[in-house]
Image (cartoon, rainbow, N blue to C red; front, top):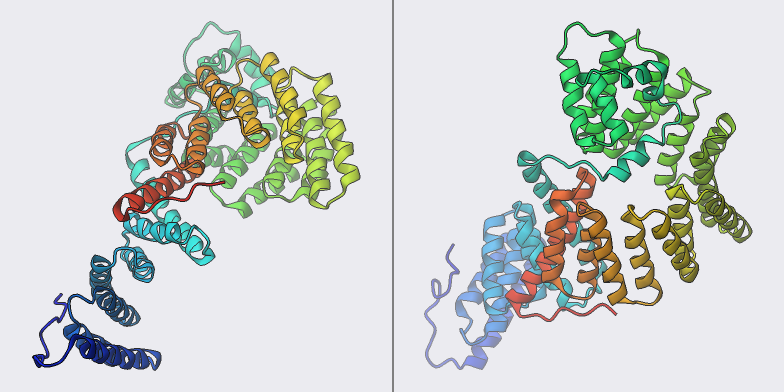
Length: 510
């Protein structure tokens, strides 16, 4: 599009520049008045006249005129001309915040979220990140860009399984596990090393990567029984969900749930797992409907209450979490995982309602549990989390050290100890050593790279942050994780691009 310069007026040679600028300012004011009356076409006419008359040396004035005309085009939903005028304004004054903000908006409307994020990040940097509305807009653009990234990534890539420790701990959360029944245990003793038999042996031997293939092999058979097919579908679905393939996992579990001849215990287990899949997908209503269905079928199944309590805790419904964990413990007092989670839920609820007496009481309960059950990793994980939340960093450090000694194969503890050190002493060098230790334990530990990325963003090392976050992407285990990592990476990339493009210094975080 033409910028209209020189297209409407032949300027008298005797008019001095100062007087000409005054004429331009008057035309701009007339444009502003028409804009305020919502006469946008007339406003554009005045701005265009002002642009055509404005001396080229008056770059700041010209930049404002282009930005004002862009605003009028924006009101008329003329995105292309709005973008062109923003470009013209910024070519004259590259750090013009109002033009950057408007261009970010129109780029976002045109679906160019990457450049939109760079522009709004430039504005934030220029404002030292003090403008809340810019922060909200940047977050909105980043979410749209992350969704775009996710859609493109998942076209060509599958999710990885979590670590062996994560999977093993997850499998142990089912107190009424159908894979520990007599039928499954009989299959484990078999000499057959294909199909369901092999899948069950893979659970025992922690050959988790081979389970899905073994289940699919079982499902291809035409002569297997209903219980074999149902167990294979449930197990396949379990690993689909662990891999982040919620759609396939939910589909397999639905097949089990809707078959009236499947034993109730397996249906309950399938409902719990489908509820988890729905929760991961953000379908909270369906999630709780499945738990209600499971409770109706098995009102005395402690697993239903344990897993629903976990979801309630994630949703910050702490009173319901306490209620469900209490029920789980009453139904199965020997299942100690429910006990430690019950204490943690009570601590969280006490903290939420500001009951300091109960906060101390259940912190002590968690500590006693750790001392009595040091072999249970969750005892350390939950107690140290509570200690960090209450800023008891020194005691948390002591228990992280014990956790690392007792559970040397668990990468979570050195990472959490590092985060505790950063909160407590801001000991960067020791924290990085611990993170390196975690990576040696589990090179696929995606959240380590995410933490390193976040940390480097906070200290202004954006190139390093992007590198770490790029490493986290292929290791992510779910869409939710990927969206979070993409958002962090996009933010770092946008700040880096903005600082380089506009030669802006990024303020350091104190």
